Image (cartoon, rainbow, N blue to C red; front, side, top):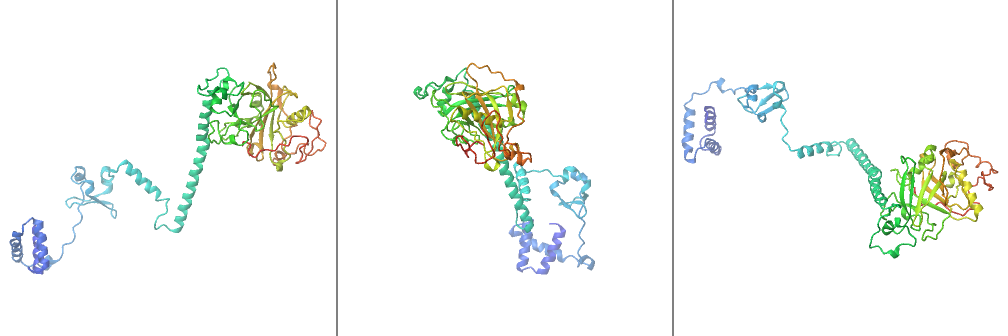
Length: 489
C-alpha cells in the first residue's frame, strides 16, 4: 500500500474509532485490497494506527486539500509507439484536446493527432452497418415518440406518397414489362408450331376423330392444344420494320371470353385475336361474306396495336397493303382498301355500323362498301371491290390522343384476293382521301369545320345512290348491329 493511502486510512480510522461498524467495514475493504488474510487483520490495523500516531500533526497549510492536478497531455510519441491505445483516449470538446484515461500521459490537441488515432476503425459487421443505416434513414420518415404534431403529419404524408409511388410503379412494371414478356413467350412458342410449308407433328395421343373434316395439317398441332382455334392472321410491312402481327385467331361463340384469356385459356390482359361471335367456321362448307377479327390495342405494342399507326402515316400504309388470314380449311390473302377512324358513342356523332356480316342483297352490300370507302382516310385506287368479294375487317381501339375523342375504333378493311388474281399494288395508287368523312367529334374537339355530310341533308356518298343525312338515330336499311360494350380496347 502506498504511503498516501496508508496516511488517509490512518486519518479515517482515528476519526471513526477502532470498534465502530464503519471502521470494521473500511478495514475489511483495505484488507481485501491488499490481499491479506483474516488472521493479519489486527496486525495490519495496529501497524497503520501506530504509524499514523507517530506522525506530527499537519500544519494548516498541509491540512488544506491539494488542488486538482491538470490532466496530463498525451504525447504524440506515446500514441504512435503504442504506449497509449485509442480506446484509452477521451475527447474534450471544450478546448479541442484529447485527454487519456491513463494518468501517466500528456494531453495533445486533436488537430495534431495522427488520422489513425482520431478516426477509429468501424468494427461492426457489414450486415450490422447496413441495418444501422436503414434504421437511421427510417427514423427520418417514420413518426416517433416525441415528434411534434406537424412533424408527424409531414412523415405520414410522405409515407402515403411513398406507398402510392411504389404501388403505381409496380403496376407499370407489371403491365409494361412482366405481362408483355410472358405474353410474347406464349405466342412465340405457338409461332414455332404454325408453319404451313412445314407443318408441325400433332401429338400422337390426340384422337384423330376429334379433328374437324378438312382441317389443314398446319393447324392440327395447335388444334390439339385448343380446339377453339379457327385461323392464323399475319400482317407485316414489306420491310418488316414496324409491323409484325402474327397470332392465332380464336372463336368462343361470344365476344367476351378472349378479351382477357390467351390461347392457353389463361387469364391475360392482352387477350387474344378472335372472330366475331357471328362467324361460321365449324366446317369447310361454311361461308362468310365478312370475317370480323378483334384485337386489343396494348400500351406494350402487342396484338392489334400497330394498326393505329396506319391512320397517321401514308408511307406506313403504302408499305403494308396485304394481310394474310388462313382458316382451318384454306389459306387466304386480302388487299387492304380502307382505314377508318370511327366513333362508338352517339354523343360523338352518328355511328357508322361497320360490324355487319349479312346483307339484304348485293346492292345493300355495295352500299356498305361505298360507306366504307367514304370514311377511309386513304383512297386505294388499285383495289376494286365487287359484290362477290369476301371482306376481312380488323377492329381495335384507339387512344384519345390519336382519335381526339374517347372510345374510338381503328378499323382496317380488306377484300380477299380472288382465285387466279395477281396481286400487284403500286404504292402510288394509295393516296390521302381529301374528302374523308371523320367522326363529328373529331371536327368539334379540334375546332375544325365539319364535313358537309353532317351539314348538307342532300349530300350523296360518292359512287352510291344512297342518300344520307345527319341523324344520330339513322340506321337506314342496314342490319341493326350495336357496338358490343365488350369490344377489345
